[in-house]
Length: 336
Image (cartoon, rainbow, N blue to C red; front, side, top):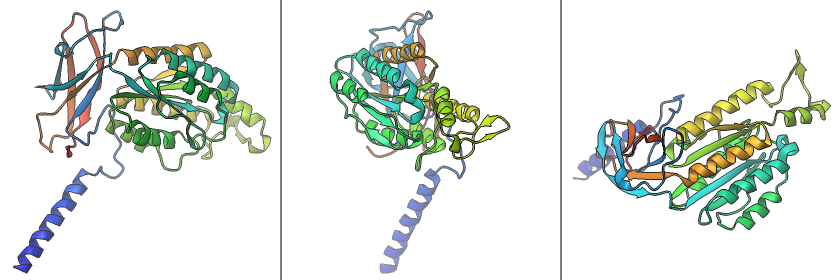
């Protein structure tokens, strides 16, 4: 009897190990674009609806929406309208490359927060070579503006570490509709834990919209290097700026790819800003889009664990409606 019990326990243990191994990604496997991996059965799909002229369509109701998974219509379990409050984390790069433009960045960031609705909550997170949580989530615009005004530049850029911390900690604790707005040049020089790949994967696992704005800090980089002759390395006329010996142009190309991919993966939008006026315009566009965001939630009817990647299609029964939403996710059933 005792031997049968031991054998049964061993069988259960072996099965759990196999299931765990099957759930892990293959070594070296690249994260796929526009995929949401959910740890529970509930799937959340943020949706923007415009007409063909590009104007937002307001006042839509749940009955206007139909959602399909792999061609099969799903029942909408919960519909959140544009009237529901939003939670936003504003993540600001204050590394030394932003020193020359920091005053303008502060003004644009404060103006962005003023465009959110009074009931929306925001949190400010600044970073250089480390993460600095400047404020908790609050709807008090004076507290947020005061924190932004007190920011000072520092050395290094831990972009990947900060995104990892914000998504897995700050945003995870926020209820309801939420978004991450990131202002950075996209160049990471100091991260210890986060990487390009694992932060993209993390973004694909969470129901968080990410809106990166790539701010042009080339002049800041060059001014810093030219003022520090002992750290200046010029080979064939190319100035190398990163610890790995990466040229400025290559670093920016990689940063642009990263920010575009993390926006696409999460269902957000990428924007670039080379001047203050364009930065203000980018912030204004994001604030407007957040005010017009709908959210659909459903429980998939297909429970097969063999069907991992699933296509999403949102249909809106309104004349000339143009829908912008996440197009796929990876099914990963969990406990409620």
